[in-house]
Length: 274
Figure 1 (cartoon, rainbow, N blue to C red):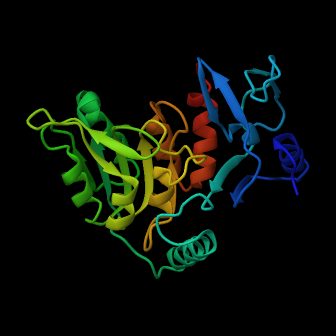
Figure 2: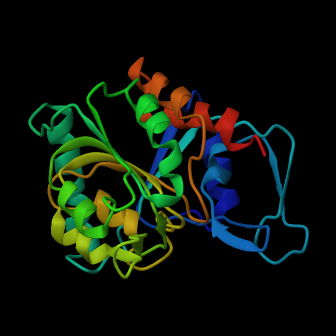
């Protein structure tokens, strides 16, 4: 019923006292072109009072005017293009079954986190782990260059963590792990994630393009729509992801903020800093 992104954005802007929005299914996708990259960006729906500009009239926004801060949080449950296992409706039905079981205390995992940092960010691993400890005092950090491999990461996905934060060069379909004693980089793919059925609820993917939800069988989709546990990923549809300010984000969650609210408030400070 929404013909284009402006129509959906106008609808959201007209809802009083709106805190956030979860888009379930296929909805209009806004596109941004920036620094020679083109990517879908639901931040367009988070900022309800700014002005997005398509200066070259090519159907993609390339500038923003007015107040940049987001007023609401927005998430997207996109399963129509996930066809490695099942169809859209069963995947969504199963997701909401998991969601309900988690909220009623029937679906439980240990209150601990995994911070998995591949070689290029290993120098900052101790700091990243320390920041995660604001949310999960029981945090495991894996960062030794010859320890961070696709095989090891896949094994740890089965080890039961409430939260997984992975740092790895990635695409919309795979994580690539450097391995100086092997033939590297070695990869873990979307199909691997599906078959592993990771034992974790929440994921922060510092992984380029892993949340590019316009792609068939996009990687973050299979973290969320796995059979048993996945509930939410934070990720990017282009290069990078959350690159700083984790203490702000984790502390807000530890103090009782919702994931959407914590992300919105983090983004207002860190996401638009550049």
